[in-house]
Image (cartoon, rainbow, N blue to C red; front, side):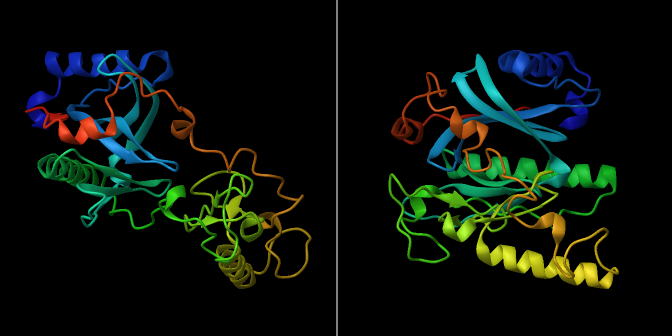
Amino acid sequence: MVDYLANTEINSQRIAAVESCFGASGQPLALPGRVLLGEGVLTKECRKKAKPRIFFLFNDILVYGSIVLSKRKYRGQHIIPLEEVTLEPLPETLQAKNRWMIKTAKKSFVVSAASTTERQEWISHIEECVRRQLLATGRPPSTEHAAPWIPDKATDICMRCTQTRFSALTRRHHCRKCGFVVCAECSRERFLLPRLSPKPLRVCSLCYRELAARKREEEEEGGGPGGGGAPGQPRAYLGGAECGASSGDDEDSDEDKEGGGDGDWPSHVEFYASGVSWSAFHG
């Protein structure tokens, strides 16, 4: 399918149409040998609630964004190299069906399709593209993945101390290492997680202790950290004034901030009850 569509006019037109829908806010997507293999709407589980997102599967990348006007305007473009992707099918529940997790070193999140058939089509097509990419690049499959964030609504109390109850005044935070929903008291520390960000990020107290202990072991094995600082202390990784605040790291992601940016998309019930196929794969 990839070889058949590569360098064809129809493929060029499809990619140009995707670029046009994202407009100036998106990155150019046309590259020699790049093929658009499929597209469709999936429900992405975000921090506050599940939201419809448009997804485009190319032979080397997965692109998704928010829907402003269906098939006409999208924003918040995200590009994921497929060689970094691992998929994990998730079990069915009464409340959630046709789900799977898309895992990468920088971000992991859960999506669901409108039907079992669409779910299987997405998984099989993505896995085949990943296999081809790894074969072409000679890279081994990715083994390190970011923890998915547990949705806010999953718990009313801090998942670390199990004492603090969240309310309009007591806000939720997320540990960037384990993805748990935690209170401010249980997530005062910051730690540098280079795969996720160049600046120190909020982590829960348990993850901080584990990360700091691991860092001390590495420094002791390597002859200690460069420069001053107390022996054994991971100087550049500690929270407080030395690292500075993680500006904005407790805000929702860009896609969660978009609020009413889902435009003319039908309601959640219509999405699953319509019986319409929301995905298409090009052959």
